[in-house]
Image (cartoon, rainbow, N blue to C red; front, side, top):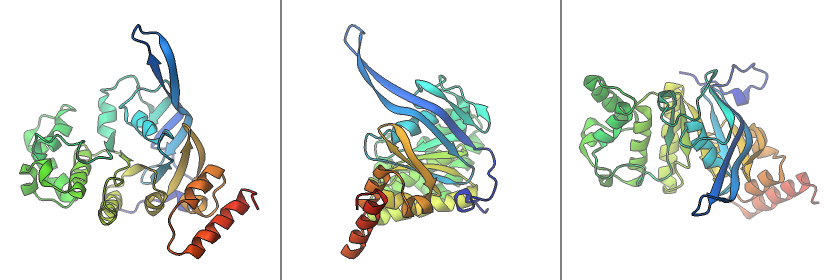
Length: 292
């Protein structure tokens, strides 16, 4: 199927967002042994975010910027301090951590493909659990879905009988993707999914994600600190700093004409092939920031 690129056609009226967040806040509070509040940190501060069906939204920032916390809030892994999350026009109950709606429609791919898979269980059982945990009991359907999900990421049924340690890091991440596909989600939150992989393997996983998006019309929230990776995959990009979304634009505009000084800083640190390119990039960003 053809995936609409809303970022590439600004004149085209957009439909309603598939997933939205308004005023999203998350505070982590530290307490004394007696339960008294000692202090806290606001990891996410009044973030507004929209994801449209079939697009890839890149969320970038340095470590501690709040991007991964935002992803976990949207997926229901942690409960927001304040704010509202809407999926397909319906407000989600963010206090219900075990919401079946969230588990079915929003899945997450974690950064470390080793620790995110149970080493004591075969791949078949890891994939089956994704459906059983939402109450599915049709054994025949579950087995068919295991086969389908493995085939989608380049594996066969034979691989289902192996343990995670029998696979390489890139292969384990493919298993993580297959697990996310088991429930046929609408949104995939990719939290630094290639940062632990070699560069050549990164490209394979990114190409797989693009292929799955074309075939299934998936919507991605792609979280990363690597501006080069985000540029390859994203239609729109949001930049986070100290828990706030400081800049948002379609990818082409943000990479060629960044407005916020922090975005300029991130882009200036991206490696280039030739020193002359680095000098030109530095000059352009300095001029944009009024430093020349």
